[in-house]
Image (cartoon, rainbow, N blue to C red):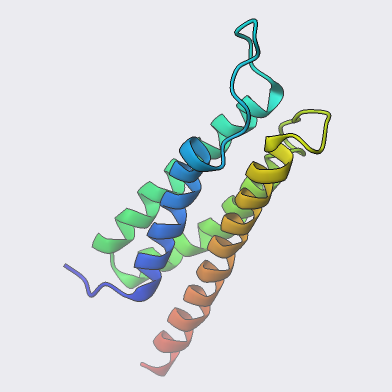
Length: 134
């Protein structure tokens, strides 16, 4: 088993919070009275799926060598940008900006997606710098 570094742990925690947090903590409103869903429900489902992809890849980093983990970090950058674009841009949400999807879910998704992007970028830079010194 490879030596686990801080980036593996941080990326796994951020990914799990993005996935599980969207599902249980900073989720949008529930179903309407008639049982149908608002548009933000579908944005939530996409974010949970992307968070699951982040989580699976982050957990896989614990078992893979540095070259592959660097590749995973590289893939996290565009994936985190796509995740930022989901609520409100790629998937439309409620029309009222004071609804829970706009005031809670979207800001939390943006924070965790940007954090994943930044941590991945720092991991790439440090790994490449470390490999050049060898």
